[in-house]
Length: 139
Image (cartoon, rainbow, N blue to C red; front, side, top):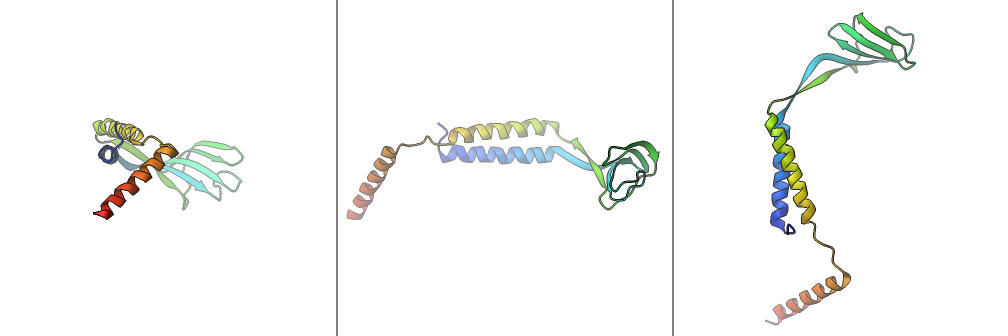
């Protein structure tokens, strides 16, 4: 039913449109939370320290041995510290439409895969093509 190129193109267009709608529905910004990984520990006598900070206040620090420090002033700084992302939905309806289009496009592509042919069917098709080619050459 969906085994021709027209349906495949429709499915690919639906997938592309759905992906664009999903892309347009989200907005990411950075927050005041920082995730810090340091090689020289500020609070522990170990090599590595991992911290979650808000502004200049450390919510949680831990090290590789499992020691934990909770809630203290000052946040360790490092080259590897990253601000946590906050993802908002700007257009919630785009999410529903986008996922629906991607799902429908996938289903159409799934049914657009042609049925496998037997060796006998393939040989018959080759034979018919050769006959048509020979008929076209004889003209």
